[in-house]
Length: 399
Image (cartoon, rainbow, N blue to C red; front, side):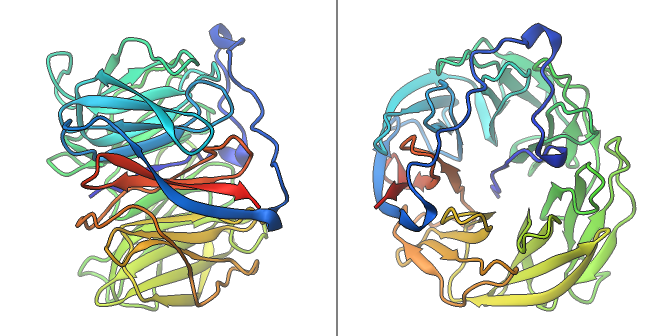
C-alpha cells in the first residue's frame, strides 16, 4: 500500500533552519512568478515521458527541483534496486539518468535535510551497506546529482509510506514511516545536517498523517480509527506536546460507515485553521470533510459521494485560485484525474472535472505528485503509467 510522500508542514509555514556550516547554499531561489492569472490557467493534455525500461516495476515517484533551474524534476525507483532521475526540459518531457541505488520498498522522498537549499534524496534501502532496516540519504549537489549514500537504521521493514515534517518544533526535517513486513510505524528526528537519530515507535491507526490542527505551531498526529472498538470509523486527533510525543486521541465519528483509505489536512475555508478530509470506500467512495472549529475541535458537516474509486488522493489547489481542491487519481481504463473544486467555504462542487492521466494500473493504491513542469509558476500532476515504462504528466498551461 503506497500513500506517497506528504509535503513538509513546518510550523507557521517557515522553512527549516540552516545549520551554520550550510549558510551559503546554491539553491534557495524564489519559485518562478506565475506566468498568467489563475483564470487563464488550464491543465493540458497528458504526455508520457519514458523511464528506464526492463528495470522491474516502478513503485515510487517523487517530485522536486533537484538542479535549481526553476522547473520541477522527477525521481522514480525500480524494483531492480535502481533510481531514475528525470530532469525537466521545461516542455512536459524529461532527460533521463539512471543509477544503481539499492532501493527497497516504496519509501522515497526529495527534501532539503541539511538547510543548504539543495534537494536531498531519501529512500528505503537494502544490501551490504544496510544494517537491518534502513534508509539511505544522498545529499543533493544542486545540479541533479547526489553525494554517496549515508545509511541510517529505521524501525520497520519494506517501507510503504514516508512523511517528512518537523515533529519537535526545532525547524529540522524529521522522517516518519510505516512498513508492511514487521515493525510498528516509527519516526526518526533529523539533526539538521543530513542525518537522523534512532527510531521511535508511535503506533497510529491507519490511515494517518500530520498537521497543526490545534494551532499551537507544532504538527499533531491525525489518524482514522476503524477498529472494532468503534461503531463507525472516527477521525482522531492526538495532540503533539512539542517534543514528538502524542496525547491520547480525541475522536470524531464520521457520518459514513465505510473503510477509511486516505486522510489529508488543508485549510478548506480560508479561516487559517487546518481542516481534515477523509476518503472512505466500501461499495461507494465518500469524501468526508471535517472543518476545524478551533482548538482541535471539528464539525463533520459535509460529505460527497463519488462515482469512482481513488488510487491516490490529494487536497491541493489545482486551479491556482488560492483554495484547496480535492484531486483523485483512479488508475482504471475509465479512470484518470478527477478534481472537485472548492467553493471557498469548505464545500465542493458535486460534479468533478476529469482529465486523462496514466492508464489501467490494476493496483489498489498509486502515487500522484504535483510540480511545475514548465517553469511557469503553475503546478500540474504526474503519476506512473503502468505497463508502458513511463511517467504520465499533465502540465498547467497559460491559455
